[in-house]
Image 1 (cartoon, rainbow, N blue to C red):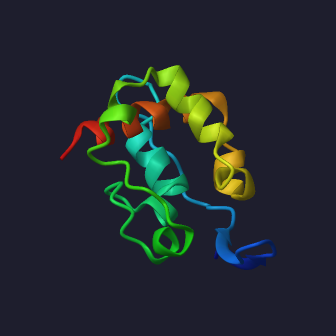
Image 2: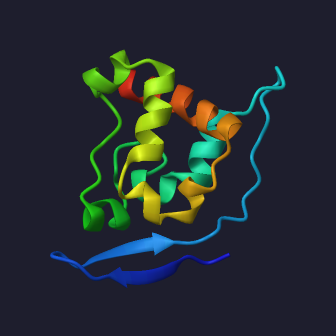
Length: 118
């Protein structure tokens, strides 16, 4: 499904990409959700597939890179999951709001791995 662009009114008008992503989510060989696949389907539009925020949406929304983030790399997985859900920008993006606990946990593991990369 294509993303819808909507202008949000406020002190600074920003463009958000909002949309349901119809991509499937892969399950790793162990039966666990593949965090990389969930991230690619649900998060990469703004964060970039590499986590380096190399997308137009990232630039428009001033998204910070996830790669090489020492603070993020040290966080507990539960805290990363809470931070993902609590982020104000994420509250307006259906593909993040709709993450269930299993998907969120898989993404948290993947994000922590990205944070350790240089």
